[in-house]
Amino acid sequence: MTQLALVIDLNVCVGCHACVTSCKEWNTSGWAGPLVDQNPYEGSPTGTFFNRVQTFEVGTFPNTETVHFPKSCLHCEEPPCVPVCPTGASYKRPDNGVVLVDYDKCIGCKYCSWACPYGARELDEQQKVMKKCTLCIDRITDAKLSERDRKPSCVLACPANARLFGDVHDPDSEVSIAIRERGGYQLMPEWGTKPANHYLPRQKTRMHIDPEELTRVDNPWRKEDLTDYTGEETLDDVAW
Image (cartoon, rainbow, N blue to C red):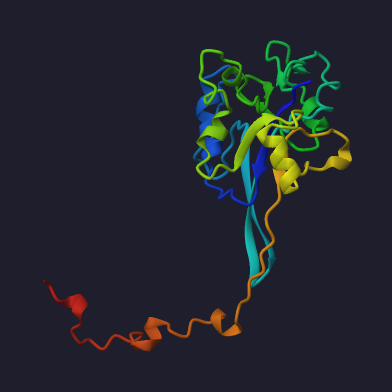
């Protein structure tokens, strides 16, 4: 059976959020929309997103690095969100393995969000239904689009090509080759959900830092002794 999925390269993701904004733009006006924002500009913004990028630091100073971790529905092969749905609104397409939500059947009970160990489902406060990544199902199944354009909007928008899309059950597909050759892994496999989406690990780098480099010895303020204003005319005071 075909299993469409994303493969995300953590080694090249720069955390630009192009995937987030393109996803929001496409899906809010598409089949899965709208994606409302309750308070998009407040101190605690809320809204419905299919894709989010989490950024955090790892390591101990000075040997630290920043990690950008995009996360969305993983389209599990054994999705726990499907059997717990009391109305059958959550389902997995047999032709391509994409997990979807039928809004006409969803009652917003949140059972699926409780069952999902990845926190990939969100309640749309306006429509009162559960929403999640659809892999842009209306786009990837549109025969009127060219083959290049039949990809999720996040894949097309990524400037670093950190997102790959394809059939992970096809051993000759781009995503399967990347997983096999570059050590792709599933998120939290111990839950037995068999996530279709995979991540390519960050490459380990070893950085040597001289202790003297942690203190800027060539600080221009100290070098030119500009810490105290003497009242004398400087080049900054001259009108050219």
